[in-house]
Length: 134
Image 1 (tube, rainbow, N blue to C red):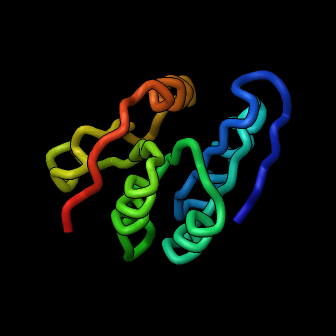
Image 2: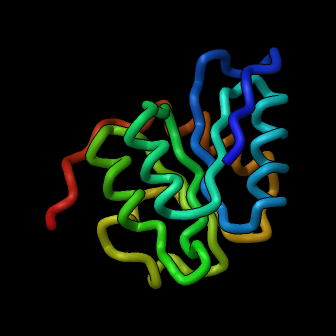
């Protein structure tokens, strides 16, 4: 896990959780976003990400769908239930994602950092939504 603090510029005090089992990708995205002024926490495993999400509040989350043998959906459910907008990153198609998450942004891997920035900015404008049904 890595914590990157605000490095100036960008969106001050916006806390972003980046979850990806590819550590180099998560750290690179975290460093980029930190350089844009975001406060970033990175996690690489589902249990680690759930623990961090339980301990800290985030303004948005960038989530890789496949975390090794696990899926990120339990974390996404937790974040959404706590009002955190989620952005998924994957090589999957939208129709492969559970219906409850199809309205959330999906960035196809490999992705461009400008797309991530655009989605993070848009996440702040999204209206709140109802809790997922079990």
